Amino acid sequence: MQHKINIQEVIEIAIAAGKATLEIYNQDFEVIQKADNSPLTMADQRSNTVIIDGLKQLSVGNNLPIISEETKLLPFNERKDWEYFWLIDPLDGTKEFIKKNGEFTINIALVENNTPVLGVIYVPVKDITYYAIEGEGAYMIEGDNEPKLLKLRELKSKDNLLIVASRSHNSPEVEAYVAEKKKEFDHVDYVAAGSSLKFCLLAEGKADVYPRLAPTMEWDTGAGHIIAKEAGAEVLVYGENYELQYNKENLLNPHFIVKGSQLS
Image 1: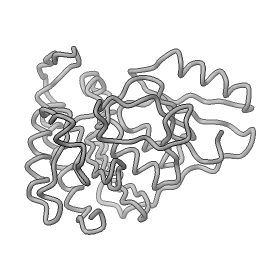
Image 2: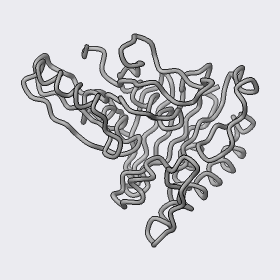
Image 3: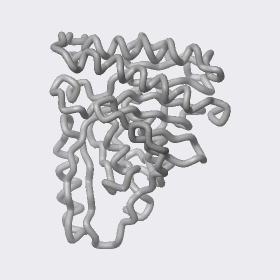
């Protein structure tokens, strides 16, 4: 299925959604509190509409079910046997959006049998697109430039370790992880970033490891998962040796770590 889907069509949907968010980002906007007290802007809702409408018009994959942060979730017994579905976060990094620091993204992933196999992340403020298809590599497009193949940075033993972590959702567990790595490496640098950009920094070779030891939802990670994986990373449940899975009964992710295989 993923090889039949036109990735360019999905990229165009993400860009259109990004442009819709920028119309609001570049003006004063109202912030609404959702039931779980996380902020919701008009941009989330507008982007969600653009993406869902766009996916329903794809030449292939237009009839697949959709899980989105901004739409009502079907009960597990109705979705547990899905072979394929779209997983979207119409505006990842709402806090970054509200702060107007530019570190928010549009995330669209295709999940097959509980694993992401296609992903697009668009960064509206920078007009940068990251995308990947299983078995075909991960790429970045800056503006109208040609796609650039992405690959993890080669990590030399005892070299400088670059750890990327959340700008808005840090945790004592991450701080403990950083402290532990300082015992193993000559130098440890800490890079903070918002939204799914943390996956992208690894894929670009600008970071070596992303320990996520704080809550995330499946839509936060699906697109970044396949992009980092196609660039050479592993996306593993923290403390375990198996890959992060999707379409769980509870869409809350366990703690996880994104890293190259050479890093223990």
